[in-house]
Image (tube, rainbow, N blue to C red; front, side):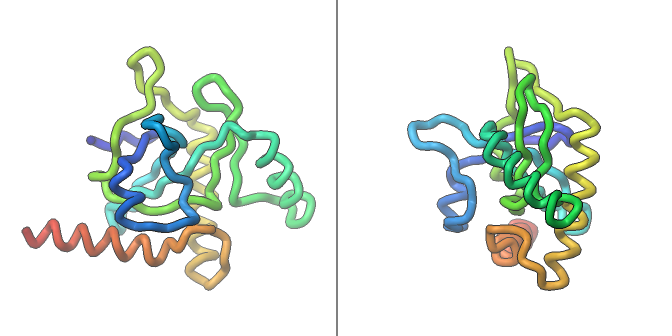
Length: 162
């Protein structure tokens, strides 16, 4: 699967089986490809950082608004529209993968559905800030992203050696 910036993807079950992190939002049972994930390339490592989307906007809007009231902003949840519906982009649940684990791009009537540029910009900005906070030891993301990144980088290294 060739990654294109600005789109939402579905991930192979194989990824979740490999990394076994209970804090990841996994594919739903019964073969449906949910949740969907917005992804951004890390140019330093070549890994893709996946941001789950949720349609449970009211739940995450309450969390978002509580964070804004307390801190003046919320970095971990971006509220916006995707595919004609309200959505919550959950940076609090982001994690790294290799391109290999992308299953397919999200489509509507066989056409890839882009993320609005304003949402892309906000997610990108917040992700950079979250990763900076994380590098300073702040716990702002639920999955163990250090462990997941090491697993993916080891795979990249192993594949390069083959």
